[in-house]
Length: 287
View (tube, rainbow, N blue to C red):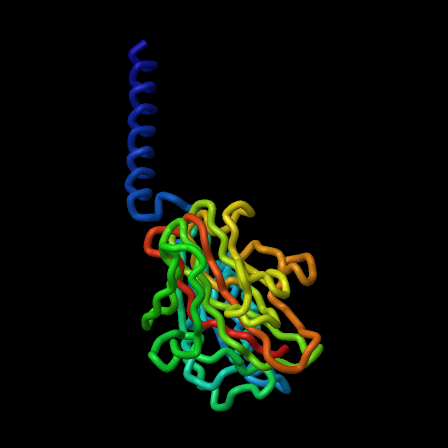
C-alpha cells in the first residue's frame, strides 16, 4: 500500500516539474504564434525598359501576406510585384507597407527622382493640389444650395456644410477620341445620405441651370451605393462605387467626340461628414 502511495507521489512530482518547465518556456516566446513578431517590407524599385516613367516595385515575399503602396497620395492595396507610374517630373518617396500573420506590419521606403514629365500622360489639370493662391485661381465655384461651400488650403479643396450642395470646375483642352483617365485623392469622415460626383462635360457649368450632369457621371462616392458612409481615404478610382455612366461600369476612363474645351466638374451634396470631404492631387491624363 505504501509503495503505491509513494509511486503516485513520484508521478505527481514529475508532472508538476514538467508543467513548471513548460510555463517558464512560454514566458520567453510570443504567446500568440499566429502573430508575426516582425515583417520585412524591403523592396527593390527598377525602371521598366521601354516605358516612360514607369517602375517595377518588387517586395521580398517571406512572411508577407499582402502589400500596400504609397507614392505620396495615400496608401492603396497592391501586389508584391507592383507597377508604379509617375508621369510628372519630381522627387517621390515610395513607401511599402508589408502585412504579415495576425496583422503585423512593417514599412520600408525609397526615393526616386523623375527628371522629365511624360508628354503623353502629363496632368492636364491646373492647380490640382490647391496648395497656393495660383493653384486655386484655376478653379471656379458653383453654390447650388447653402450651406454647401468649397474652401481651399494647402491640404486641398474641402466641401463642407451638411445639407448643402456645391461644385468646383475648370476648363481643359482635349483631343477627339483620345482616352483619358480622371482621378484624385479623397479624404473625410463618415457621411450619411451624401453624393460626391465627377463629370467631364462639354457645357460650361456657369451656363447650366440646375444640377450639372452633362456627359454623365464618370466616378464618385454615394452612400446609398455603399461608399462614403465610412471614413474615406485614398484615390477615388480605388474607393469609389459610382458607375461611369458612359460605359455602365466602374471606370475612370473617358473620351470625347470633340477636339477642344471640356469642363471637369466635381460636385457634392447631402449630409456631408463633419469637417467636410477634402480632395487633392486632381488629375486628368492621356492614356
